[in-house]
Amino acid sequence: MRSPYTLTLFVFSLCLGIWLNERAWNGQVFVYIGEQRSPAAVRSISEYSSLDRQALHRSAQEQLLAHAQVLRDGDRLGVQLGHPLVDRDGGKEFGCQVQDHFGAFDQVELTFMGNGIAENGVAPHMVVTSRCRSQQDLNQLDTIWIPLGEILGTPAQDREFLFPSSDPVSVRLEHMPDQWPENWVLWSVRFFRQDDTANSLTLDSSLLRQARPDMLTLELSGQ
Image (tube, rainbow, N blue to C red; front, side, top):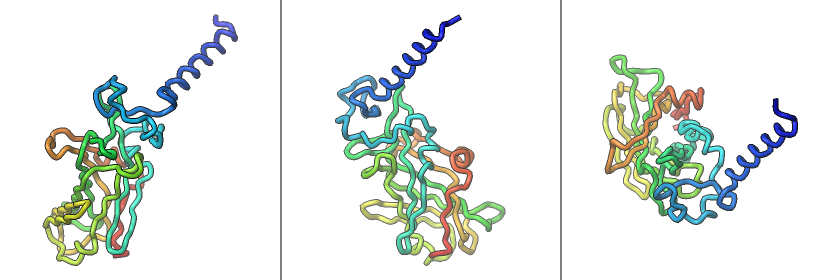
């Protein structure tokens, strides 16, 4: 049987190891930007000091929705999502572009389901596609702005909108009835590369609901 001294030493050593691991490389969290096990491939340590360490232990859907919110700016609604880290070659990689570094993916696709109405028993879909970037806050993706005012000014029908700008967005409407739903619920999120759509990460409604039981919703009543 271990003596109290041995047990105390074991616990102390374990805690010390965790402490040192958390603070390796001058106390900063490391994410692989290039080749695995190549410290030179990791950018200047101080650049990524604002990364939330808890993200290393959260699932992708938890990172995505931990601080997700819907913003309103005039006739636009903005979807703000967390920036997930993805497992890659034994380490973690930024899901989307960070500053001048590419991430695992360069596009994000949000699928919303319309509430309360359906066309032939199928709920309407709104699929929003945008670039996948994190330019300001490593823990957040750049806000995806949806020009809902412009969209709602057209008849409710299946169609696709392209909004070219410095942050281009496309919006595709499917299974639309002849009236607009009052709100849209975020149903799935897909990250992918434009030049390799097979390289993707999809978070479906069951995974999103695990991370956030009250599903993220776009309310149109204020439009």
